[in-house]
Image (cartoon, rainbow, N blue to C red; front, side):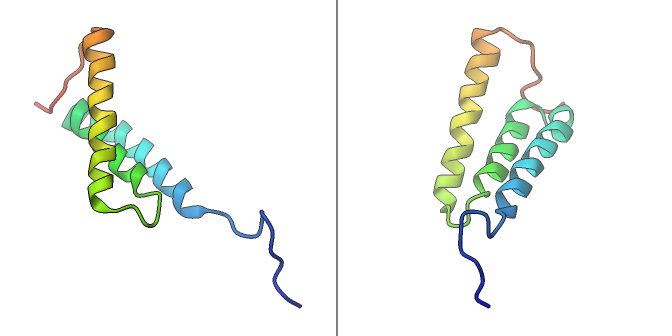
Length: 86
């Protein structure tokens, strides 16, 4: 019997694992590394959820959300965050 083909034949495990790993990495490294490096690490891990993302695009995807989060949380909301580790 041939394998079935349809929308539910294969579960995309890599994106689920990488996004979960990004969340765990952010939560565990924010206190040690600071907000900017932790956000960058989480963004890189999340960008690696796709199989064929070029390295330059991964770095750009890390820089954009990191800068955006800094603008939103530090400048606009005026939260006192440790930007870099002590």
